[in-house]
Each structure stands twice: as structure tokens, then as C-alpha cells.
Length: 351
Image: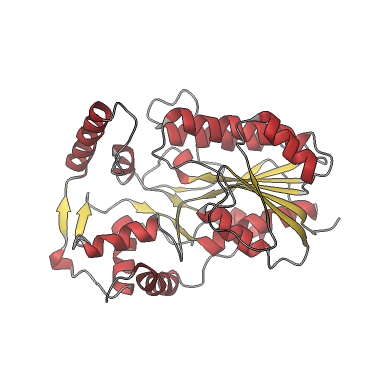
């Protein structure tokens, strides 16, 4: 067997993770063609890549795309934001994933299907270092799961179940908080608090620990999984935890970014707000938005995001290291500082 990637399809290849993956694939000599399908392929575009506007929730569009390009490898990175309405999350994360799996299973050339899952898809186990065997996915009937968590979990489970070697082998890459250069989500949001003088704010007691992953390492794990499948060295239908291999409280991570950006937060200047007080404020904001916009808009500060800070996640990377050959960043502190230095220039933030 050969690890040549051949024709590759990146679903959601205009998003943050997807576009970084496309960038990495362009440097892969065994990639003969790179195709991207995106609802609106207008940003994060690269020369030499073929972009296809399309909706993966439309089974006809997906089938025609696979018939047209005959991919050998499919990377499914697409997902709406976690605060998107439930019907949109379900269309992409559940219906779209099912359509992609069906088309991939019916396409003779497709050998590897790699899906990007999330720490949000798993039940939180505070204080427990989870392995893939001990972790529990939310289900359709989980009462404490928000729509994003539930739909990502359903897709995670169905991708694993769709494994059907030798015609198609699937793998799930589970990632936690993603950060890196040109990041308007995690890094951009956190560094944006510097402009407002809010970098000293903390929600909750900052005791739960979390995992984070540098975007280039997340992309590398996807490529490694595809190559191991094509080489016949990976048993499919499995999920893998990917992170920097460092578990730390959320606001410790944030303050490392602030320090790297030249705005360290002295311990005596930290202002702590009650987690549940902020959750309550967020819920009031959601209620007001629902009334005054007739549920057509949602606030950025969502209660589900705040609640997540009370749980945390802690992962064992042994499986990814042993089966994929994955190695996390050598020194997370160094990477965070490099990212912060690059981002303050891009965002125009003064030291």
C-alpha cells in the first residue's frame, strides 16, 4: 500500500482549521489535486486549489461533487459556530456528515475519511484524565448537552460506525480549543479584551483545567491519520485525542497570551466574577435578543460557553502518539508567545 494522498477533498476548507489544512496539503508532494467545498468560498483562498460552492446538507450536490472529483482522501472539517441555531447545526453536523459518508462509501476511489470532532462532543469529567476508551460522547437524548455538543457527538459516533475497510476507512480527530496565527476566534477574542482594558477579568475560580492545540499540530494530526490509513497501518473506526499535551486552567492560558502580547496581568490585579452570575447575565441577554430580534439574531456571549468553563477537559495523548505518530508542540509557552507576537501586529494592538 502507498501513503500517497492523491486527490484530496477538504470539506469546510475556507474555515480556520480547514484553510490551514489546505495550506499544509499544498506542501505535500503526494497530493495530486486539492479540492475544497464550502458554502461561500470567498476567503482564505490559495492558488492551485479548486474551490466548489456547495451545501453538504444537499445530498444531490454532494453526490455530484464526488462523481466529479473522485477523491482518495476526504477531510471533513466543516461545522457552524457553536452558537448557531440548532436547525443549522443539525443540517451541517448531522445531515451533511451523513451525506458525505454515503457519497464516500459509494465512490470507488475514496479510501480515507477523516472527521474533525470536538471536546464539546464529550461529557465533561472534571479532574479525570480521559482516554478514548473512558470518554463518553453525548447522545441524541443527553439532557445536559447543548445543540452544538449534541450534533458534533452524533457525527463523531456515526463516522466511527461508517468504517468499512478495505473500501473506506474512517478516523475521528478530536480537538480542544484551537489557537494560532490569523485566529479571529480564540486568540482574536482574547487579545481584543486588551483594547477594552478587560484582560484582568476572570470568570469563575479558574480551577478546572482544559486542553488547547496549536492549529498546525491539529492539521498535522489529520494528515497523519490519512497516511496511516492509506498505508494500512491504522485500524479504522477510531477516535484520537489531539492537543498540545498540556492541561491548564483557561485563564492561565489567556494570561500567557496577554503576557506574550506585552500586557501581563499581575496576580493582584485579577478581578474575579462568579461563574453563575455571568451565566445569568448571558441568559438575560439571550432572552432580550430573542424578544427584540424575534429570534433572528443571537448574542456573542452565550450561556453555554460560560457554563463550559465550569467543567474542563484533560486528555491522555498516548493513543495518538502510538498509532498516528503524533507529537505535540515541544514547548507550548514558546508557541503561545510566538502567536501572541504575530497577532498583536495583525490586530494593531500596541505593547
